Each structure stands twice: as C-alpha cells, then as structure tokens.
Image 1 (tube, one colour):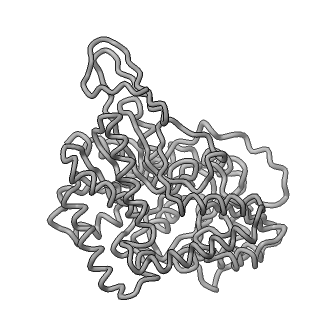
Image 2 (cartoon, one colour; image 1 turned 90 degrees about the vertical axis):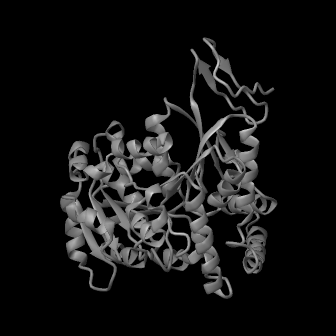
Image 3 (cartoon, one colour; image 1 turned 45 degrees about the horizontal axis):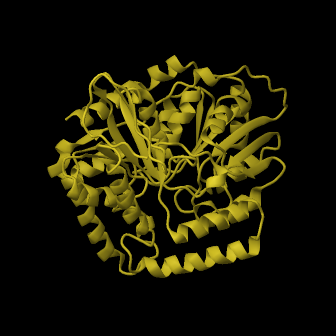
Length: 446
C-alpha cells in the first residue's frame, strides 16, 4: 500500500509505506523534511571513495532531510541486509555477472563462471564501439527509470549526482529536462572527458572525446550547482569558465573516529601493515609497495583488494608477492574496515596514483585515525603534501631507489603511536566536516 501526499499537513504524524520497497517517511507538526536523492555507482554494501565522502555529510544532516540512495551492487541480495532507503538498479547482464562473481568468491562452479564472465567481457568490448560513453550505458537508463518510479512515491526536492562514474549524470540530466523544478547538484570527484576508461577500448578516441566534452558542458549548463574537489574545480573553471558561478570548491572531510578507538593490546613481534582499496596497473600500481614490504622479513602486510578486482589488471603482481607475510584478502564491510584501520594495525599504507585530477578521499580516512601512515607516491600530489605535514607520516617514491632500512625504522619507531583527532583537525582545518556541510547546505538553499 502507498499513501502518497505531496503537501505539508497539519499537526499529525503520518507514515508512508510502499509494499515493494518499504519507503517510510515521517511528517510531524506541519513540518515535512525535504527529500534528497543521492545517485552514485556504489554505496552499500560496497562503499567506494566518493560515496564514502557524501555519506559523511548525510550523517551530519540526516535530522534535517530525508535521504534516499539509488545505486548498484555487485553483491547478491542474500549477501547483504537491505535498507529501506536504498534502491538498486540492475540489468540481465548485471544479474548474471553478480551470480558469477558470487560463485567465484565461494569457489563454486569456477570454470563455468569464469567462462561466462569472459564471454560477457568480449560482448562488452564489442558493444563499447557503439555505446556512449561505453558498454555500461544501460546504467544511465536504469538510473532515470528508478528516479521516475521514486518521484511518483515521494516529492523529490534535490538530486545529488556523485560522479565516481558518469552514468548517474546522464540519468539525472534526462530527468532534469523533464522535471525542471527539482534541484540538481553535481558532486564531481573524478574526471569524465579526461578519464582513460572511456577511451581505452574505443576506435577513434578523439571523436569520442569531443562528444564527451559536449555532454560534460551540458551537465554544467543544466545543473543548479556543483561541488568539486580542488583538483577538479581548477580544471573545470578553466574548461568551462561560463559556469564558474555554479561551482564550489569542496575538500574531502576528516571524520572523528575517536569513539572507535580501543587500547592497543597487540603482543606481536611483527609490525602489522594494512592497505585497503582497488589497484590499477596504469594509475595505482602496487608492485613497488609489495616488493618493498616483501624485503622486510619482520613486517606483515594485509592487502584488502580482491583478486579479479579492476578487471584483474594486477592479479599477476598480487599473486607474485603473496606469502605468509603478505596476504591478499577480499574487501570487508565499511564498519569492519574502520575498526581495522583504527585499532588492528600498526601502520596504514596508501598508494597514490599518477592522475593529478584524483582527490585524496582515502587519505582523509587514514589521517582521521591518527595512526602512522606510509604513503607510496608517484607524483607530488595533494596526498604527498598532506603526509609532508603529518608528524606520523612518511612519503616513499615509487621508483627503484627506496630505502628499505629507513622504511623498517619508520614502522618500528611509529608503532603504537596515535595523534589525537583535535590535533589532526588543527593540521588540516580546510578538511573539517563543518565547512563541507556548510557548502552543501548553501547549494541546496540557493
């Protein structure tokens, strides 16, 4: 049953419920919380960096707004607990892929599942030559359809498109062209026109780049505002100066994890290191980091990065360095990840990348713990400069001239140390959550 009312009511309390998706909203004393829809490629149960950033803001202002999320997941429904305000898009191809990846995780029907994934990959390679921006264009239509369904159930005040991938922006654009009174705020964390993933399998990439640039311009033309990481902000106001007034620079935010902290009771002789996140052969290659750690016999490294993740680009590297001291493990839920980086490991590891348009979202989580950080970098980007300011941090350049003895000494000297969160905030005042929430609310209000 769906009780659908789009106007504020008097002094009553009402619940809205839909039999399929179980939407529940509360109206009380003439007040209606405004409904905001977040669209992002990943949210729950697999949180990527941009969705993790927007989630910090959601937690800060959830008492003022109702938030709904449209996303996709590579997990099967049996592998996570559904939440009432999260809606998942899917296609037949995506359903088949999810089942195959689940089989591989459980080591079931491995040969058949790998064969199906290979066939789907070849089909996508063919499809990419004709689909814009690539073979995953079905996601854009699916986001639009889910927005349309949701708009019939609740009164949408604003839509936030989190641009870890561009498909959500295409879906929102089509919806905005129909529903012009709904606010559209972009949260731009990753490049689109310059992103190599939209060209690497295409013929005539220069023509596709012109098409992408035209579409990107149309996003800024139609949206009501945009939050951009500093790297993307600098690039955007140069590329599209006529829309500079719509753009706001937004730093990724620190988060106070003090409530999660536990006393360090480890009696292990080994120093324990952790890296968690995707790796890519071209832009975030883990080889130097793994080679370094394998050269130090008395440290232990856990890498939470699925084999086969990011199309298996780095599987050979991960398998080459796996040992008793270097483990490659599957991703874990966000809550478990936060507990691990706050309490279970002595040194946190970050691998930078070669893109100067990528913002340091993961680094903010690491800094928020106050724990020692070992940063392997390719270029002197924002993450490098953050570690230069951090008293418990060390930068290591990803070339062949690393100093293993110096890294080992850092790991042992910093073991057990932690910087109070208030001191971290003083080091990075531009990354305090209060400032980011203020920018977010200003864009919603104007």
